[in-house]
Image (cartoon, rainbow, N blue to C red; front, side, top):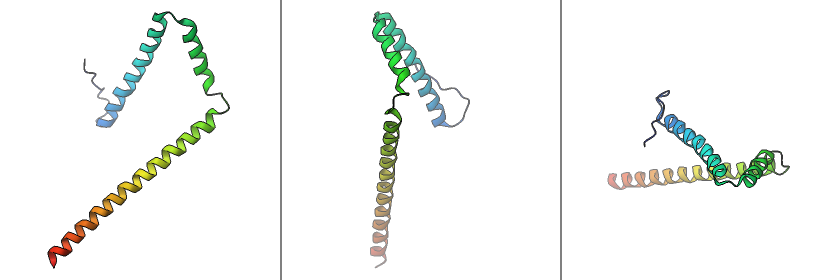
Length: 102
């Protein structure tokens, strides 16, 4: 079955994002149903308790901030490499133009 995005927006990326969010939401309910159906309720409840206490752990915020810094640094490096590739292409095009003029 193909899931169709809602047509609340005309932007393609927004519609794709809506579909992705809906699938994630559905998958979360599928997991909970699966875990309860298998009958391992004790492990399931421990996981829910762990999830509730995760954000209050003293190392959560420093870890999350460190991860965010890593992602931002990787993004900046990727942007720099993209700019360097574009500049290299422009230089090659300029060299070709100069050679043709001579």
